[in-house]
Length: 166
Image 1 (cartoon, helix red, strand yellow):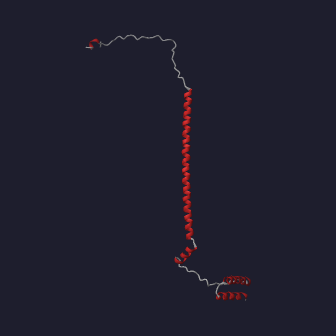
Image 2 (cartoon, rainbow, N blue to C red):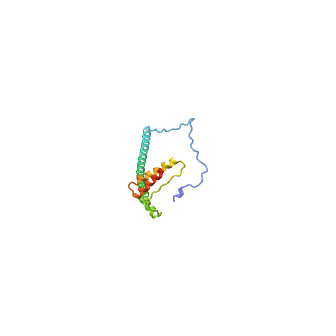
Image 3 (cartoon, one colour):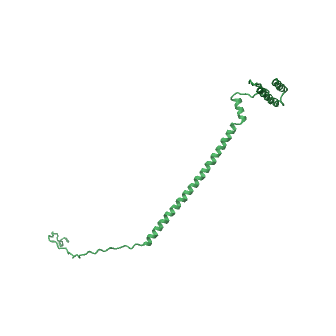
């Protein structure tokens, strides 16, 4: 039994601790780390190169993005120009004289005027000189228009001239 060799009794007396004499000045050892300036410089240069590379990559991505946007905008412009040309073509179709004539005849129930009908308008002004000049100009226009017309139209034009002379 190993327990017999141990002393379990409390010890009332403590052994005095060994006190070492203190000198008046206390000397503290300070260890200075030797700073390697070359490593710091290389670290700073490495960090600067990394940031510069990151900036270059950003600029390349930005320019590529702007290039894609330019291509997309050019495509949009060409689509809008094509749509504009289609609309202009539709406007030209809708405003053509043939279509307007068809709409007037079919939807508005209009009919073509006869080419043989001439209308003479007498101006009822007080001054006789203006009256003669107006009717004379009308008759001259009708006479020039009736050169290729029928004989009835020629007769009507000559009667108008005679009426103006009186």
